[in-house]
Length: 320
Image (tube, rainbow, N blue to C red; front, side):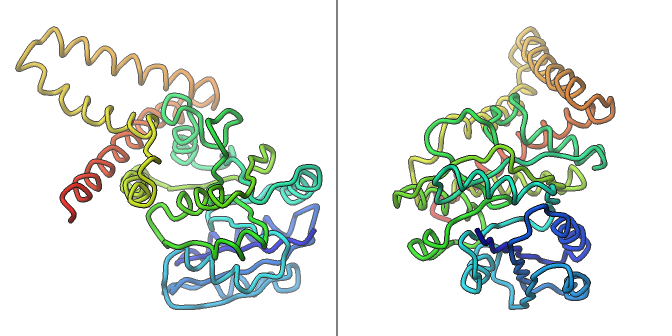
């Protein structure tokens, strides 16, 4: 089975260097790598050149069009039976392609996705953000989890599609703001079989500061509303939790005007909730600093997503 790895990149040469280095260590090496430079001002051509003798690698540079259309650009030039998409801030464990090859040999899947994890060598902030993005207390544990309602929706930080899927769907039809969610829904709607390959995980560095994380999750909240323009039924109860949290947190500070007692009850519930997050992170990460930062990351995630959701929802209602 031959894989084509498509990696769009925008001004991240250092990340590409680390990602390509991880690909040289794969125990199954029947794959090509296609780097699509998406209009970067700080390109990674030199970093790619370092691996020309170790990988079957091709480098393309094109005007900026966003990650979705850059992936399509790579798909159009790919030779593999499966097209595998990674984000540039991922590191790939050495067993990844061997795991995927074995799984796809035993299970017929047209598209698959895998979870993401954090390495112990990541910064405490990156580990806290990874905890927040995968925690039962923030996302319901649905990202990369075994148990999920309905068909599995692969996400493009770590996903693979068959060549047939691309030929039938023509790939991404939007390039930013929920492009991977829309693509996954359309893959499923066209009758293709999707699934989670649990052991095909990647190490995802994500953002390096809570400020960057806020911007990313604010965008995710907006993206969910954008997806609803295509698929109105794709706003689920789990997507409303950050909205309720955001509204509740804002209104909590108005409660003293009504009742100090109600404010104290609300503040106690918030403290209890974030206390659970702290203890859960401490148990899983075995690091006090990561546990403290997990509280901040979880608050940032919920509040930013909720604000983005509400802002884009208002634009949709008012047609702006």
